[in-house]
Image (cartoon, rainbow, N blue to C red; front, side, top):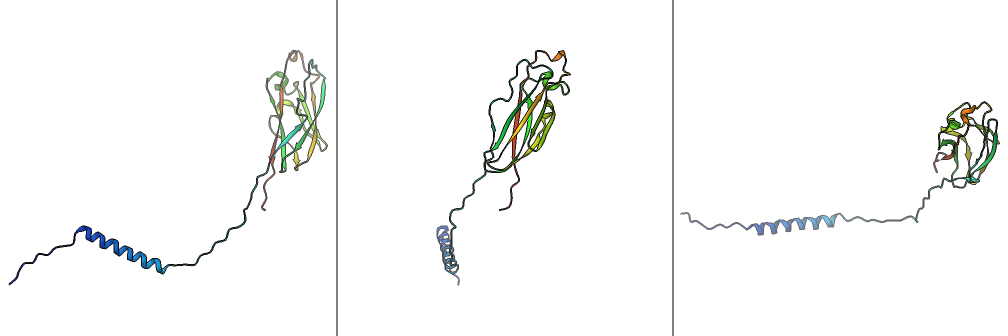
Length: 182
């Protein structure tokens, strides 16, 4: 007849040990069969340096300080633009009023300006209309050019222009020329 035997199953610890052992054996076999030759080379240090865009003005003092201006007066001053950077650029000139008086805002009887250089006139009109960029020219590194700034107070200006003070700034803005493939 049949007799009952006690059958015991391995414990969970024992099964875990067997599983880890099997995984290690697989990794050892795979590791031995996937060996590859490798080699590496490194280039000498490569360097990239960015350009410097720098526009300088000479003289750097104010262009105009005129007391007792009367209709019909005109003033001529010169300013030199110098490219002291390492990249060629174009530049433009704009005007800005700090006091926004009638001398600035009146396009007919207010201050008139004529900016020119050796290539001819760059801008000729009211100082107030110079608020949008007026492209002048381009300068290579180390180059400079002198601009003549001629301010006129029209003879047609009436009594409403008496006892007015105006402060005008001229801003020179440089923009690099497009980059190239090197």
